[in-house]
Length: 162
Image (cartoon, rainbow, N blue to C red):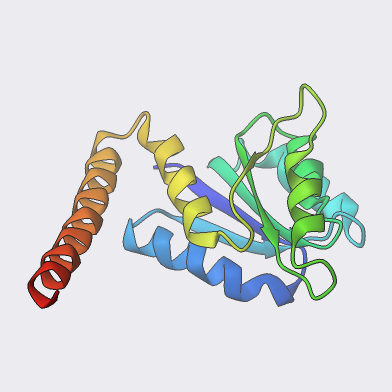
């Protein structure tokens, strides 16, 4: 199975990344996590992206706040799918990161999840891998079914109570 690369711009993004890691662990998807900054370690970020396919990655997740150029910098150096997680900051509640992540120029796509959307980034990466992995697709189907059952159980409880 291909692995998922997770890059965060700073260790302050770790709580968001933890949600992605937990989701990948639950689905038994191999992953690697690194801290590379688009601005402070651009050579390392570029090298990681340039070599990601050869190193066995099937999709990449990049999380950053504020200017949030990390996902775009990674995407500029690979044709692997890149999923950006804009991270909330104290200044603009993550809107700056959201806009920096989602507003990519034509030809350099970055799929973008919600602000602090670590779990959804991991699920999207898993869905990308599941295109060619039937066992993973079945795990995702089961996860979706289990989530629906939880909602329906809560619905029944509310109907009984009210």
